[in-house]
Image 1 (cartoon, helix red, strand yellow):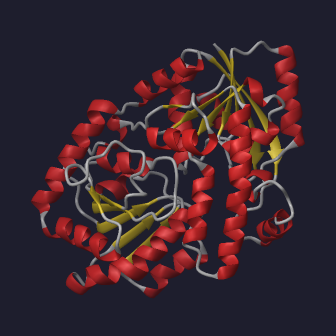
Image 2 (cartoon, helix red, strand yellow; image 1 turned 120 degrees about the vertical axis):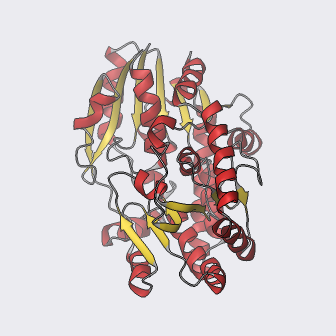
Amino acid sequence: MKILWAKSDFLHPTTKGGHIRTLEMLKRLHSRHQIHYVALDLAEQAGGVERSSEYCTKAYPIPHSAPRRATPGFWRQACAGIFSPLPLAISRYRSDAMRRQMEALTRVENFDAIVCDFLFAAPNLPDLGAAVLFQHNVEALIWKRHAEYAASPIQRAYFRGQYEKMRRYEAQVCRAVERVIAVSEDDARTMRFEYGLAGVKAVPTGVDLDYFTPPGAPKLASDLLFLGSMDWMPNIDAVRWFVAEVLPLIRARRPECFLTIAGRRPTPEIRGLAGKDARILVTGTVPDVRPHLWGAAVAIVPLRIGGGTRLKIYEAMAAKVPVVSTTIGAEGLDVRAGENIILADSARQFADACLALLDDPGLRRSQARAAWEMVSACYSWEVVARRFEQLLT
């Protein structure tokens, strides 16, 4: 097949779950098909265009500026976005130049499939009716949860407004495209119910087992590990809640409990946690997450806000690290609570789950073994790519 793939950015540095999922699938699709990749070339993604040959036949970079979150430019954009019918998360990636490139390509090339990867690229597609929308999240659900956990009435009103805009836009695009592919059956059910999408299909989440399985018995360097992009608001909320509400309960029993927060672009608030507490390490961007996973006793996923699926859970399982997660954190994944993961939603429950694993090496080993066996049996990226391939034809 000849596939035209549209996305809001390039895939390197690969620091987000969405990047990982797309990269792993495209590498496999690229081995069998022609991939023409059109994406915005963002200044923050050094080397992204140069490495695109790893996953596509030809790349079409479109220069674009999208201010980083929490910068003055971002706040100016956010204020202006109040009066836009589009949600800010969509309008910041709108590009007339990318739209013109897509139009030019579809005029001269005969593509077997056109993929809009994430909702963010949708404004730049001239003919949504010819495209397959690859939905890594139910985007509106994320904004709805932001509103539920907002710290102030002003934030609540802003998030509620963004939720309403996102829900309208997401429904509009989902109904306009040829078909929708979700990343979990949970998301597919939500889109069927919320947007009336009877034909939405799902592909599972995968993991590179060979890459993440530890080579031996690693030496523990941290009691608890949170892994994730630290400029993504759901992750910031998760760490904020865990440190304020859960960690004190753990330290009442284990005063020296050490927490590592590993992920790109931590905000000043997150960096400040390490300055206030010598038992917290904030790494920033790491070239390889595996040493942090292999050196952790327990991986934590205390998400209260989110959508789609968390690749970090399957990565921890492949690394043979037991996982404690909220129900929302494990949403959409085929896990079994009490067998290969512990689910806990209140601060007390989450603390008790972490303590149970920290106190019992045997329990850690048995849960880690069950989780590794599950992901090794069912969730290779080749299986995911083959399923996606079938849904394109």
